[in-house]
Amino acid sequence: MVAASFGSGDFLGGRTSARSSTPGVLLIVQASALVGAAIVAVSVSADVARGDVVNGAIAGSLNVVALGLLYLGLSTGRMGVVAPVTAVVAATIPVSYGLSQGERPSGLVYAGVIAAVLAGALIGVTRDEHTTEGSGRALLIAICAGVTVGSSFVFYARTSSTSGMWPIFAARVASLTLVIAFVLVMRGRRTIAFPVGNDRALTLAAGLLDVTGSTLILVAIRRDLIVSVTPVAALAPGVTVLWAWLLLHERISRIQFAGLVVALTGLALIAAG
Picture (cartoon, rainbow, N blue to C red):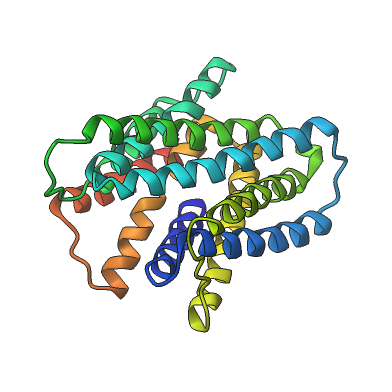
């Protein structure tokens, strides 16, 4: 469900970004997510401490920075480098953190985690017809994007279970604040086009799906090991690819199809473990 929420939200946001400006889409997505986070937060009883709010705000800030880095990396035309590297690094960071904290899953879970990380890399691979020029820059951007995404999971894991969903609300306040600042800066340089009509509805839905994914990942981390949960969340690109195939009839390469098969295998191993 985590990967499905994130992947579906990315698909909708990507579709509307193609017809509107990315800053405009980001602003509406984050505003919608903030409303959803507020509803969830007040609906769950909690005893929230200052540290929970701080960790949530840091997680939200890292998330939105990661999104900006991902867009920047994809704009270099090196998607075949950016997408798989980001997915692998994003999964590796929280897994390393969990192991350092003493988490020791079963052998089947280890195998599933490795399969999930490999699947994220395979699904993100696309045909790249550009030259190798700029690959180094794209690789650096992808690593930074993966580190920020993975680190956000770690900060969510540092919140207490008694804090309810208030870390999610703090995360959305922080991310929306950063996006507003970004939009204000960009308005002085170019016109910001906001989605209208059906695109606006899709953008609002993308925000709700995004906060749903964040809420589910927080619940999952608190109930299970971060080592086994976060690699599954990194499979979100697979859901995006599936929606593009089903609705836009985009071709799935053999490598991506193999990644989907490996992903299902990894999920089965994690569940069995």
